[in-house]
Image 1 (cartoon, one colour):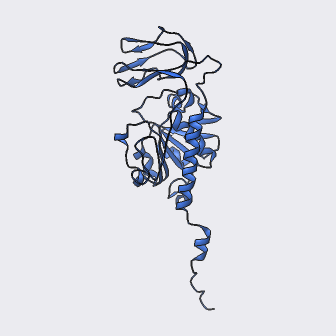
Image 2 (tube, one colour):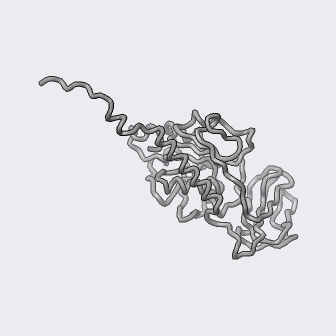
Image 3 (cartoon, helix red, strand yellow):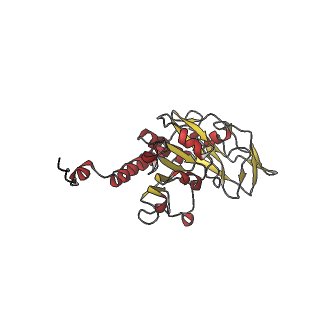
Amino acid sequence: MVFSDAARLGRSLPSAVVLGTDEIASAVAVGLLRDGWSVVLAHDPHAPVLRRGMAFHDALWGETVAVDGVAAVVIDRVTDLLFTEPRPDRVAVTRLGLVDLMTLGRLALLVDARPAAAAAVPDLRHLAEATIGLGPGFVAGRNCDEAVDVGADEVSSHLVRAPEAGPWRTALPLGGRVFRGMVAGRLGRLPVTVPVDGVLRGLVRDGTDVARGVDLIEIDRRNRWQARWTGIDARGRAVAEAVATAARTLRAARTPSIALIDAVPMPPRPAD
């Protein structure tokens, strides 16, 4: 069951909604899919995605995207979800907001995987039957049913932040080799240069309007054979496993056991 009304409606609906389309949200989606859920990822327009090679994000711009063997299918309308058959090798990705998705009924599972400041963390508990929050600011019993720590990234990389707000333009490919002093792109009219040698592990998509101070470029300082910019890394797998475990626990807690159902006395059978 995806929404609480799914069984009654007799429709195939997405069982888990994951907020965000970055590499952590995408790893979580793959983990839930392989744990028996059907999944839809909802795009967060406020947070540019850096590690696009590890995410389903670019599918929203018409690109063919797969993460760890799982393909993305773009959903443009809420009604499309009613006719999308769940499959173990694909997830739905959409620009639709949470309010739009909730018009189909009460959510069975909601995972907030959006990168956000602790002060901006919402209370999710009234939005779904089971809720999981990722990262700082989420506390089980306060604003979600279960909280999962996303941990720290151990990759030796260098981040370049946007020095000002504006439209970002770049022609560089993810995984490409870059060198110190090389122009990676332009923020408005301002050229943004690479501060160290390395491999492009992360790069905000060309044409994105960015806010001042957001992560714009990530450079893996290792050589091309050691660097990784696609698939799911160790951190993503750890978070995905923790979310899948939490989801199983919450689902079990909210599903009446067969023993309890059988223990309910049946009404007496009418006499013949």
